[in-house]
Image (cartoon, rainbow, N blue to C red; front, top):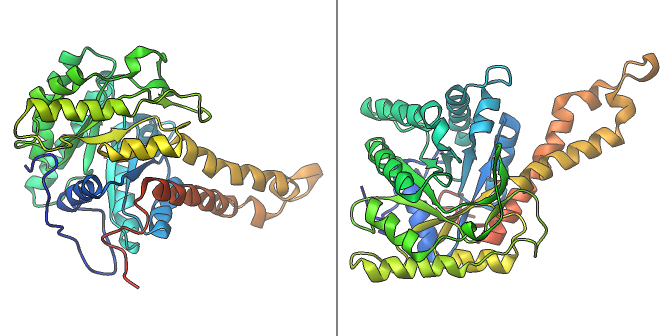
Length: 363
């Protein structure tokens, strides 16, 4: 397994139809982002419509990208009355593998925040399924999985991370971990906004000691620097991107084999962040930034506008029959997809990935 920060020769299908990225292509995507100083938006989805919107947005931006599903999103994918995270995640993966073939950008699949109490019903069985698939000569269902150990002591967090990293290596999957606490609320997990939101250089060194500092492993690290989930206006979130530089420098100084930016960093809880803060964080080695709250609103707002603007056709008022062309889910669904796709394009532009797809058609 290649080391963090190691350059790789891209192995990319040059055909017209681009499938989901292979593990090799995904590593090259992340390595290139760190090398060239940009990051990929990682867009949370919870339905075929939001998944289509995300891929469309990446394609319109000319950007490779990452699509991810949370535990709650996976439950929803399986059916609101079924609520089986593994079933939903595998269904999402199967759908994505089919529709991605029709686009000319590379799309990687990722599972988002998975706390300790959901590992046995989400990440572990998904990794096991990919191990079996790879043994049979196939590709993993997902290119990366996240273990969210922010709610447990660091020592326990890293012990579980080591176990999961070993299994992910067997399936040629990248593990993402979180060291520190992200404030706010996501999928029912609610954390206070306080000094625990800032990872320390000692946290970074402990992570490198447990998982590797550039020798024979590959993983992504979400260090926290004041990140908050949820809806916040710029200025209400106290980010300290310098925390990331301090962490990278500490690991580089401690381990002779480490590169200048040893970690492939992940930016969680980006709502309320200014463009300057995002750009600074990316300059310190952030290669992936999660985007969820903003794209949820970007999908829903046009639908709300459609319903308000066409309410007489959407609703069967006073015994009338309504207007099928207006209440057909495809009509308002298209409006939602278009709105979300535009927000994905904007995220690609802010993070610098727009126009840099290695799979995009050349003019």
